[in-house]
Length: 263
Image: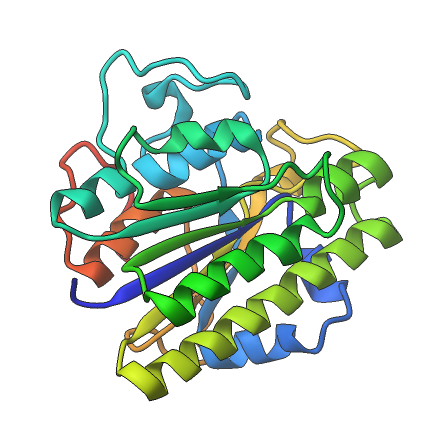
């Protein structure tokens, strides 16, 4: 692998939710790397279709996942996990919503950790703890760390942009800070370079999402690493661009079927 990557997805994080959550690290994120506060997700703007597009760089009409119920692709497209495995890379995933298990094919992961957000409190912190342990102990090539409480307990239970929603976004951003500090310590100790990418799958409105409304389809995206200019504001960023960009950073092949561009 040329470089290592950590991808953090904060489920349901709207750009205005990010900006008003109250965590002081939001300003640091915009100083440290390149970012776009008007990145575009896909329709339907629901969790599983968005993540399938994030990892396979094709829209839902191509991968065929049009709801939160998985169905096999009629014309299979290799995803990011599979491309990393093809090159001998090590991938981990830590998540709190069970259907996400289907974004990677069997045997494409070395480790995974699942904690049901409806079954336990403080899920996002616990998932981050699991990821941090692996970062410090093993330095896997790629980690996908999913923050779920922003959507499940923030948006759906209380409404997007409600005070509880903003509190959960604040917790997620605090976990971004924890990961950022961890990769700096690892670099000092081992010399390994990690690029940290933070994004969302979709936004939301009222207590819903899934439409083409701006509130549902617009997401923030941040790229903190050697190849990204600090403080640079990007334009024309799509959720489809994440897999090709990560593959390029890591030096793994990009399937010709992918539609996104390298940022």
